[in-house]
Image 1 (cartoon, one colour):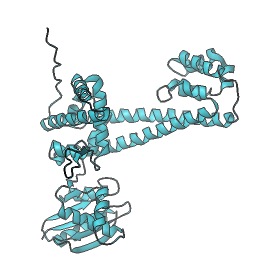
Image 2: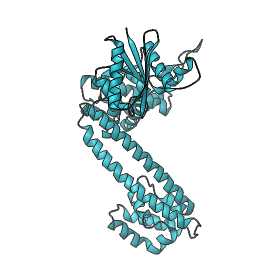
Image 3: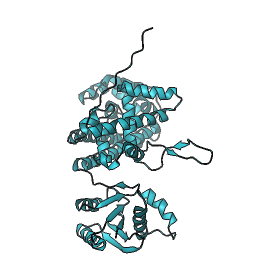
Image 4: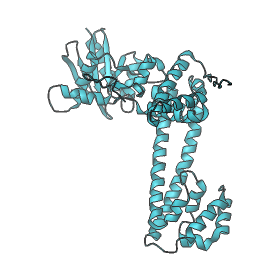
Amino acid sequence: MQLWAGIDAGKAHHHCVVIDGEGNRLLSQKVPNDEAALIQLLATVLELSDGGPLVWAMDLNHGGPALLIALLVGHGQNLLYIPGRTVHHASKIYRGDGKTDAKDAAVIADQARMRTDLQPLRAGDEISVGLRLLTARRADKSADRVRAINRLKAQLLEYFPGLERAFDYSRSKAALLLLTKYRTPDGIRRAGQARIQAWLKKHGARSSAAVAAAAVEAAKAQQTVVPAQRMGEMIVAALAREVAVLNEELEELDALISEKVTEHRHTEVLLSMPGFGPVLAAEFLGATGGDMAVFQSADRFAGVVGLAPAPRDSGRISGNHHRPRRYDRRLLRVFFLSGLSALKSCPSSRGYYDRKRIEGKSHIQAMLSLARRRLNVLWAMLRDGALYTPMPVATPLAA
């Protein structure tokens, strides 16, 4: 008798429901997220199956259930992944309006029983899991940096809009250094260009002369002291130091990711593909777990990435395609950004993109089409272990 075990995963506890081939519940149990309790759950479910086929399914593929996933994979269990959004929509067709962990676990088990399109869930190799953690940390720090820069610019607008316009604080480290000491119109005028330039140069700032000149010019254009200046400059100084620290942390993370990614067997192939650098390669490996066999084919992988259009045909309407609602946004971001980068360095990608624009496609449509083409190429490269070979650029025939 085949059984299906659905897990509604959580942080402190998981809920497990086991059903048979007719959907009858054989077990409904809340289990602490503890190794001893999880091993006991595994033993109980295996005893129920009595050596028969057993399929596990859960709605999370990392985070809280990481320990449970590792235990199930380590014991050779058949484990499927069903996205939480799918569980949410599927639960509407089951009896009752209430929502409980037990009901969600039962829905997960029943969906695993009926569906054949669910992806196998793998714990991922150690390097890929480490890269996923590092890239997630980098994404958090990058988001913190963007927020800090936006707040810094908003504070400057409160009392010194000329200085806010003078620099791109996301690129200029010298401008951030300037704000830690000189950040008001009267303070910059009193210091003068020569002193500011010397101070910036002493602290290792590049283009100190240009930064000092731009700051003095902005200060001379504003003689009015805004009431919010005293409090605003304190906040600006704190934000400038915060952004500088975040820049250093991001540089350290990038160096660590660049070192760690070289340890994976797919890295050489990924880095040979135009548009892929160490960070995007690490994000790709972290999102896929480093095992492309899980996706079975390039077409199925494209569906997971969100590059396989979903038809919306009805009646006489046909050929109406839209982007799918369920896809891995991390992987789509990797292919989109690598495609943008490839436009600058890969004549083949540039030519394909230009052809799509000539055909009347928008920039986004052309980029998604290019991303799908690059996905097929990358799939074949990883399957065969082959490095990217540039296509020869066709030369126009002489008249």
